[in-house]
Length: 467
Image (cartoon, rainbow, N blue to C red; front, side, top):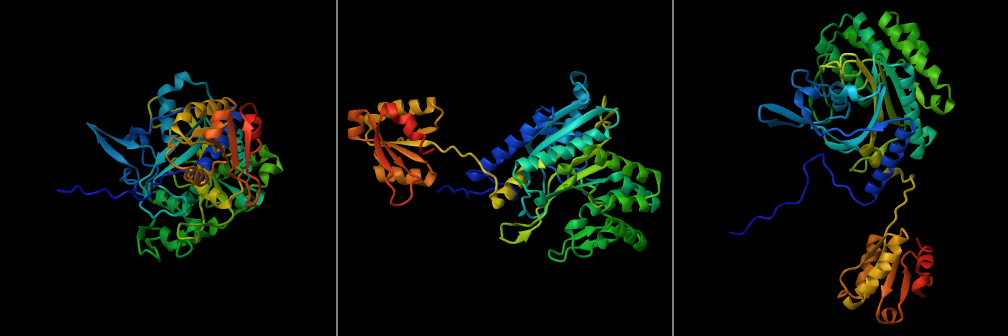
């Protein structure tokens, strides 16, 4: 019986990475880590798995089924889940290890997170993706300085990644303002309030019939999918939509009258006062629809958006969504024993999404050090080839030795051109006998003299001319 061959492929929402995308990913990680360290953050590493109840239901649209959007597994008598973000594990670590930390505790982590997305991917959205998080945890209330610093780090990082001022905006809001509005509208049921907040988070992404999300249900005009609404009255829904159009702090102050809303506005004003630098102020705007989709945020929220469309896999222009977002949270740690008095604020860079974006922009310079290749015409010459390779490597020049001398020079050079090797060191009969090397510049333009034979002692100086 013949054995059935396996079909190569990945589950929906997962991707392999190689080539330029990995080079850009590495550059992004270098830039954000540099800025985290500049601002005094310390790296930690958390487990990819947590007990399911410790992760919580902050991601799901259904408060009664928190496991719907996360990967969950049976582990003997308890369920465990892959982390859906890096903040929930941080809250567990702080609650468990707080005696080992100095507060305020500044931490960063760059790691993969996992979400059991049911929607189709295509705009930098995956079920497994890389995030770069930074947070400050306080023993008590989060001060405005900490939130202002988040805006500074986002700006510094975006500029270091060569984004121009007109290419991105940081939208800032405070959930206390919208919570105060819900209080005024007599929306008291926890599940209903949750649905309203999740609907508002989709405000900018839904062009048609957004009001249906606030009422009974919304039917997607393309897919036909039905999303249960918040079941508000027509008057309640219309008042919320009018409120979401407010984009100026002065207008919000005129509109907001209750104490919770005033508290939220004051916190925003303090942040703008601390920034006091146009480098940052020019990039920040108030947007009352930016409440963030994760349910643990309870005051200041941030969402960094790109001011242009990108192309999806079908080559159609689409909005990319947020690339660096977060906010403040008071209850994330208090769910745990030992965590009652800790509050935090932080932000997450969506590294995988930024790779997707920067591959299309092609405006970030990357230092790709492709190796020099040594082409050997006879297996008897490998000792000399490895001597040459050692000289190059000892001078910080990446070098590979082509391992099959049965392939003729043409095939070896075809391989080198396909990989993008900049220089070939050719060792044939004459080179081995004379202890020389023939250098071939593989980046030369057609018609240029691209080959020269040199002495071994001149190797480094000559190779550096081409790399």
